[in-house]
Length: 481
Image: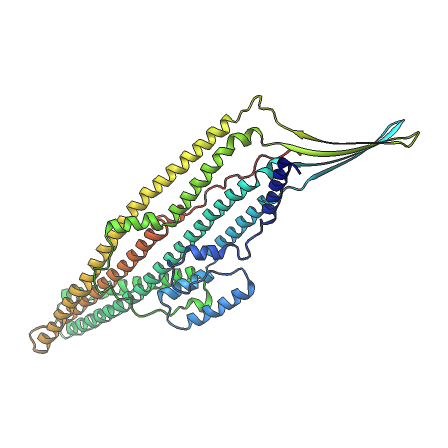
């Protein structure tokens, strides 16, 4: 066997082997998404499986988790298993994987049969044809599509991290709203006591109408704040149930009574420079754009050649002509190749388009890298400021309000302060509790945004940042044979 023929057969076998390996991932690439989010999600967090039995087992675990107060990590675990939007996104990833396998499957050859009869002979034609370009470019297309699926996996991982962050935010808001509601109930009770006492004192002639009206106005304002707090708590719970994908009796989620405590000190916080370096190294949206640039640049070399020689066909023919008088068969065998002639199109436009695509991908990567730098430093600054404010509320403002209340109680017991001073200070202390709770909530929200900005994607416009770009056409132009 000659060396050129040996190399041709080797290339053909390698191409056929690649075509045979183009199988669909059994789990729809969920394992790859899980690997990309490793260390960025709570321990033992898993994605929903496409298997019916696994989904049933997941529902049992969710029911067990909902029987106890749900913490933030458990809420994220439930959302990853039960959120229908994430399941739809993972199904779309599986569909893209199926499209990849289909694109790597060779086109079926074409068999042409013909029978022609005249007065002297009968002719039978048999022609087997197939496109050469798809076979020749199979190794390159396999690499391009592999890179594109890696990018799609990174995009799905971003969707997963965004869902986890949204779920954590919803949980924080629900718990904080529950705490604020408890404080507003105490404030409303204090205002009701003051209004009732003012009414009785006015009836006894010991209180003026102006003083009674002021206490009644305070009571009405407290009642309005309580109504708003109840609405906020209900809305926050509904939003949390939506992210968790639960409804009915499961939507009656049990939550902890208080938010997680603040970190002990601010010494463990990152600096702005460290946050920026971490974002450039770890963010999944930047990884996806780097891979997109690799694919675009690698395909640029094929653009001009593919536009000119994208319709090469090869066919094998075996024709039999039978003389009707003598019965003699005349067999003709041979092959033919169809090559396009670059008379008008030399691939210049396709090459220019490829260069523009590379420039566009590079510019997008640069723009998102600048955005990531800014978001990392901004999110860190917000995180640090939120910690300072929450720590001030917890360590200074709230203890000071309670100290004033204790001193007011002592003076009331000693008959140096009136009951109105006591009620007013109770309302002030309750408002300090509300402010401290909201500051604590804002800190944990800022911490969630910072983690997403450092390791996931943009916290400000996450859905736009992880939007899947238009899929590049990795197949050569359609073959005519």
